[in-house]
Length: 601
Ligand code: DGT
Ligand code: CA
Ligand code: CA
Ligand code: ZN
Image (cartoon, rainbow, N blue to C red):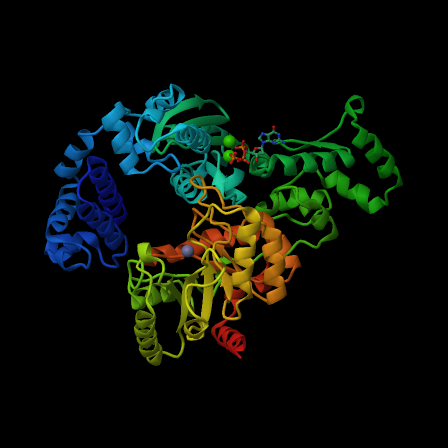
């Protein structure tokens, strides 16, 4: 059992105890232990077996014993018993927005509500309003929350889907007879949430059956919903649907292109093929028959007669395409990276050969929004820095929470000083890696910041974020954030809309006005790369770029492993048409030193 699973179980234990009405300290101890475990940098099994697990900060004697049992026997009696003592549906109810363990416990005890379905019925029957502290409004909110949950649970976070897809892909791709394979669909386009997983493969005819079998009998498969010669569909144990298409190798580029989508992009591609006198589908190009000439094709035929010989030559080559690049080339288009295939101007740019050279993961040299165990992170500054170095980065910005964030152990002015001393000492030892002194300062409801200008001036950079009072009117919230951006010590805006994908909507805010303000005041906006956030949204990146607003791709890491979330942020930046020069943390160490210095002078 790896540390992530142990951390998950500890967290669930904390919640189960809350549902039981255990004392809050005990519950919190489990949640804290969960965080401590996910932050471990040494092997959990070794720690458990040597008994050293007891010395990990945040882990007491009783929890240490449970972890040891889990790690050594893969089981925990206490967990199994606790889990079976409560109806299964209670945990699911916690997924409804605004419903926490206290409410679930109350509803269970007073009204015998054991599941989301029970809750829905009770709301509709007006039963909740009979409880003290509940009213008609609560019932309406709960019903709306249930609706949202239902709609959302048909989608998955890209991080979850990516992991699931990779596991299926790994098995398919290594089957004998497989020639090429690729993960397609919205995952390949780096969408922030994913409906289902699409895998496309080409294989020798004789191998197709065994390839399909390897897919449908994969250990992650819950049930098979379709099994055929060219397509199989399964539901994974995680609840995600996954499709596999197997085609002849000659068809592969077409199938890959088609199943990568988006649908809107495909429609445009097909239209363009028609203009060239061809039809385009998932199998290939074929010449349009005279009878089936679309309006496009009639025009195309007229144009073809007028077209110079060179173009007509291209039309002939159109049928044989070995790669996706060939398909685009055949239509006189530059290759369109999958992330851009949303019909938001990519074909026009491909035609003019003005597509951007998208930022890449290897361009990233460091990052800015990270937490340590000074606030609500699990790791020390040094552990975070080491992890950053391992990723090949040259600097790491530490931005722990400010003092008002009591829930996250925010830093007082005193502790800020202590942290700065520690960072200075660490930096003394190195010249080729830098830890930057930052803060994630709360934007108060008034738009003022949670630290005085004097304290803010002691940091090398400042991330300003909203963490409270989400229920403001749009105009007020916009004013609040813009006021914060005006502060001369603020370097960048953190998670600008506060959304949690599939969980919580953004607070109302006029992002165009915010981007305009960032442009006026020379501020950076972050793409928070945590897969739950991916905020700034990719749809707004182009506008930010147009307004010359630089973007920082920040992982908002609370453990060392969290740093790699930058991967998802890069996907979003690419989807937003951003290039290396648009992303501030592609600067090298020397450039970054200079940049931060220039902010302070
Ligand atoms: P998802 O799964 O909802 O996150 O989004 P996609 O884009 O992966 O959509 P999906 O899985 O339904 O289909 C995969 C691709 O197949 C899609 O991006 C484009 C292509 N496709 C599916 N249905 C149609 C269609 O009716 N017309 C066209 N032109 N393409 C389609
Ligand atoms: Ca899909
Ligand atoms: Ca699909
Ligand atoms: Zn934050």
